[in-house]
Image (cartoon, rainbow, N blue to C red; front, side):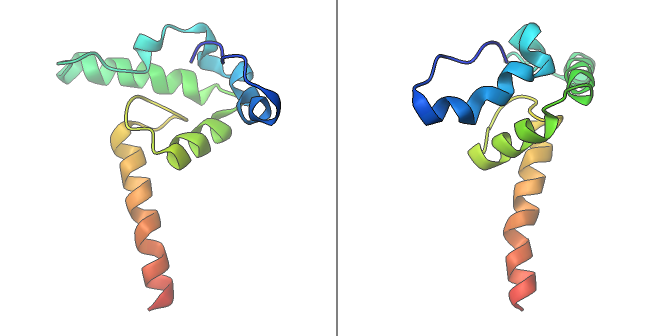
Length: 100
């Protein structure tokens, strides 16, 4: 969301995908709920954020980053906070099932 900071050397390559993000021209408030937001307002804002993500050419990169970094807040890669937590829980359980 927004422009990436100028990063040195190889680190810059890790963030280049953000320059192509559909969300770069949007206010970050669309992707991160304000304290106390509930109900219809929350659902409408989150749905709008996910709509932007659905058009994003770097959705896969964004989602992979958010899951790897365990981003705790906001909509990233088309997934809400709860959806990312669910994906991460499922990933933690998978190796145990395979080993059993």
